Length: 507
Image 1: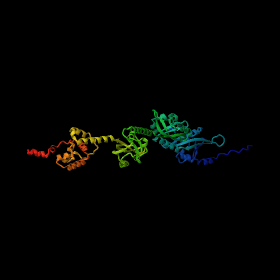
Image 2 (image 1 turned 90 degrees about the vertical axis):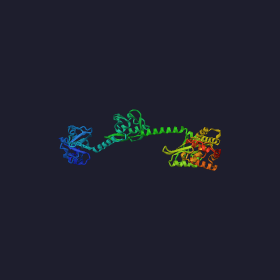
Image 3 (image 1 turned 90 degrees about the horizontal axis):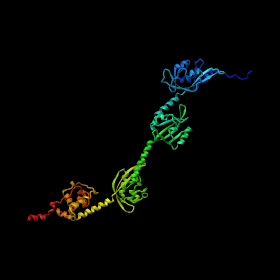
Image 4 (image 1 turned 120 degrees about the vertical axis):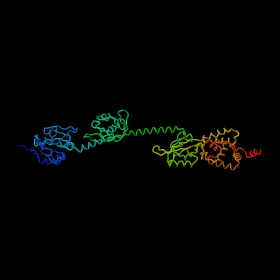
C-alpha cells in the first residue's frame, strides 16, 4: 500500500480564474488547435473586444492577422507561433509586428513565448501562448531613433558587448566628413574617439565599466587627415534591449579657429605696437593706469617700462598742462576721439617734449582701454621758431637781401601751424595795401609815410589785419600772404611823394 499523497489535479476553472487578471496575454489551445480561452489582456493586445474576434482556431487566426518580423519580412503559413506550438515546437521570446489583415498600416508589437501545461505525467493537456505587448517600448525606441537621426547635434551609439558602433547620425557625419560605412561596425578604438584626449584612458575605463562618461575635450581624427576639437560625453542606454553607450558631441573647432585667429591677431598687434617708431602706450579707461608702453614711448619720456606700468599720467606728472590732460581724459570717458591735441610732456630728466596726442577707446581682453599715440614735434617746433625768427630778422632790414631771397624765406614756412581765419578776398582794400607793404619789408614808419597816415593809424590797421588773418607777427603775415599767392607788388602811386609831385608841377 502506497502512503504517498496523490498529487493535486489542476482545476481548469481555477487556472483560468488565476491567470485572467495577468498583464501578460494568455491564449489557451487544445490539442486539436482550437482557441479555447484567452484572458482580457490577450484580447486587448489584439485590439479586439471578444475572444471570437481572434478566430476559432490557428487557421482562422492567420486569416485575421498578418505577422511580420522586425525586418518587415512577413511570416509564411506554418511560421506563426500558434502553428509552431501545435507542431510541437518550443517558442522563446520571438518579437513580431502584428497587424489586422484588413488594415496593415495599424501595427503593434508582441513578444511571444509558449508553455505546455499537463495534468499528470508528460501528456499535454493545455497549450498556451504567452504574449507581452512591446508596442509602447518599440514606439519609444522609434521616436528615439527618429530624434537621434534628425538631431543636428553629432551623435554615435556603440554596443557595449563589443564596443562597436551601431548608430551614427547625420550631425556626426557632417562634422567629421566620415561616411556611414566608415563608422558602423567599427570599434571605439578603430575610430580613435579618445586617442587624442588627455583623459582618454579614464573614458575607456568608464566605457568598459558601463558608466557615465562626463564631458571632456578630445581631438577626433578626420578621414582625410587632421582632427577636430570636440567636447564628448557618454551615457549608457538600451537599444532594442541591448546595453549601449550614447556619445554626444559639441563641436569646438570653430572656437579653436577663432582662438587661433585671435592669438595671431594679438601677436601681430603686439609686434606692431612694440616695434612702432611712434611713441604709444595703453591704459585702462576706468582709472587711466598704464598697462603697456612701447620702446619709442619709453625713449621719449625717459622712463623705464617698470616705472610706467601700473601708474597714471597724473602720478608720473607726465603732462605739463594738468587741465588739458583732464580734458582729454574726460573726452575719452565720453567716447570722443582725441586727435592731434598739443601737449607738452615733462620728461624724467627734467626736459620737455612738444607732442601731438591722439587717443581712442578700445576693448582688450574684455576690458575697456585707451590707446595713446604720440607725435614728438619738439624738433619741428624748434625749427619753425628758428625759421620765423630768421624771417623776422630778414624783414627788419631788407637792404641786405634781394626781393627773391625774401620771398623764398617766407615760402619756407608752408607748414605753419597758424590757422587762418579769413581768405584773401575778404580783406578790405586798405588791408590789402597794408599786407602788400608788409610783404615788401616796409616798417610802420615807412608805411605811414607812403600812405600819408600816422604811425598810430598804421599800427591800428596792422593789428586789425593780424586779427583777421589769425597771425601775430610780420613773418607769419608774409607767410599767410605767400601761401595764397599774394606777393605784395609795390604800389607805384604810393611810392611817389606828394612834395615831389608839387615840385614837378611847379617846374
